[in-house]
Image 1: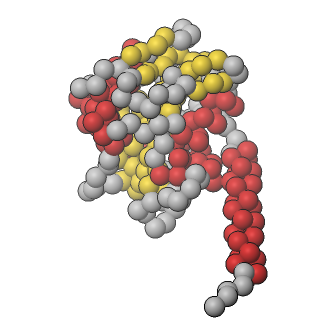
Image 2: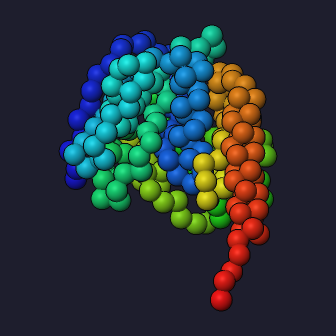
Image 3: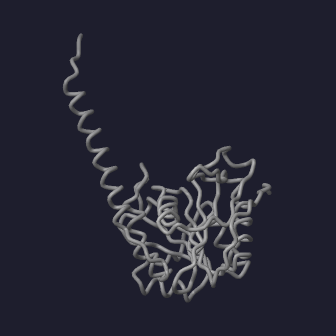
Length: 240
């Protein structure tokens, strides 16, 4: 099992916090949304996780260096408070077990008993959100709010490990499988997650417009590049 080092940040007394996990999977759905929430809500940096098994880099924010994986906290007006775990890096398969266990231990220390893990997927043809988890009542609530419950299938990576490890630790872990573009970052898919996620975490109050604007700008840029390539190709001459 890989060795992971925990770096302590600020202290924050949290009340029945819910954790949202956002790592870079299909469309970077979780990473984009987690980064957006932490910046918009000006969340406090509580801890970081690093390891020799992770790519060697530091994230610079407001002139300060932060490790590859970060944990942020937010006191809300109404319970539950919110914890976010995020990163730009997808760990190697052999590092997933140790990292997942380290994250769960840190969340447990913060008082977290409920986790929502965001997992981008490209396998579902419609816009429905598919969920699976460890608590029947949470699954029943998700289904009542328009989400399909996965009865049979595979959940890969850290999210998959978190489901059975979290269950063993007595934690309510829900994996939300979010349809997204598999070929590029998808802020539009991240914006679409906000509504169903806010049903699972009522104290998460956030607007989706900035992410939709980012998606529109990205789509316009791609459209322009495609049009320029078409014009360039049409103007090429072929010499025999």
